[in-house]
Image (cartoon, rainbow, N blue to C red; front, top):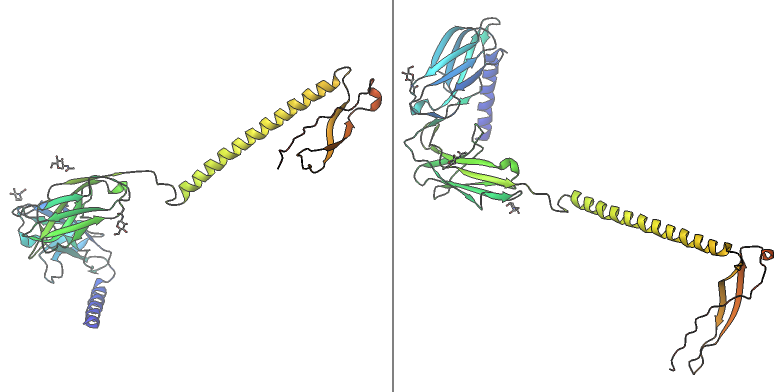
Length: 324
Ligand SMILES: *[C@@H]1O[C@H](CO)[C@@H](O)[C@H](O)[C@H]1NC(C)=O
Ligand SMILES: *[C@@H]1O[C@H](CO)[C@@H](O)[C@H](O)[C@H]1NC(C)=O
Ligand SMILES: *[C@@H]1O[C@H](CO)[C@@H](O)[C@H](O)[C@H]1NC(C)=O
C-alpha cells in the first residue's frame, strides 16, 4: 500500500514538474480573507509575475477549471457571488505565459472557509482559571454534542486557528496550553467543522480570556538567580570584611600612636614590661600553684637616654584551683 502511494505521488510530481516548464509562480489571495459566511460575495485574486495569455481557476485536485480569464496583465479577479456550501473548498490558479511561453505550475492551495450560521456555536470553558502564573498548564474545552466533527481553537489577532482537535465521545474537544507564558495571554474562541462536504464551520462561540501573570523566576530554576544570590551574599561579606580590616587597622594605628606619645613624655620610662616568660610548676595536692617568674625587658631607646633606671614591673595573674 505504502510503496504504491509513494509511486503515485512520485508520478504525479514528475508530471507536474515536466508540465511546469520553469515559469515563475503565481499567487492566490482571498478577499475578504476571513469571516466569510454562506450567502456572502468573495473575490479570488490571482497575482501574476508576468503577462499571461490566460488565467484559470481550479478547485483543488479537480482537472477541469471553473473559470478562465484571457489576456491578463498582472492580476485576474474571480468573483464568487452569494456563495453556497459547495463553494467552501480549496482553490488554485494557473496561467499560460506569453514570453516565455508555457503553462505555469498551479499556485499554492488556498482554503475558502465558510461559516454556516444555521449551526449553533460551541460552548467553551477554561480551567483552572483566567489569571494564572507563568508556567501553568491551561486547558480550554469546547463542545457541541450534536454536530462537532473537529474543533478549532481561535485566538484574537490570529488569522488562522492556532490548534485543532477531535472531540471525544461526548462531543468535547480538549486543548491544552503547556507551560504558558505572557505571550499566551489573550482572548480565545472555538468553532467546529461541520461534518460532510466542504470547509463549512460553525459560528465562533463565546470567548474566554487568559491572562498570564509574569513572575520572576524562583532561585535555582535556571541557575542564574542562585548565582546572583551567591554573588550578592559574597559581595556583602567582602564589604563587611574590608570594613572590619579598616576598623582594626585604624584602631591599631591609634593605639600605637597613643603608646608612642606616652613614651615620648618627659621622664617616662623607656622600659616597659612587654614580654614576660614564666614557668608554672604543676599544682600540689592543696590546690596551690607556684610560679617562678623571670622578667625580660626590651628597650626601644638606647639605655643612655634613660635618666632614672627603674626596675621592671611584673604583672602576673595567679589562678588557684580548688581541691580535687
Ligand atoms: C453580492 O453581489 C451581488 C451582485 O454583484 C449583489 O447584488 C449583492 O448585493 C452582493 N451581496 C452582498 C452580501 O454583498
Ligand atoms: C504540565 O504538564 C506536563 C505534562 O503533562 C507536566 O509534566 C508538568 O508537570 C505540568 N506542569 C504543571 C505546572 O502542572
Ligand atoms: C468577550 O465576550 C464578552 C461578552 O460575552 C464581550 O463583552 C467582550 O467584548 C468579548 N471580548 C472580546 C475580545 O471579544
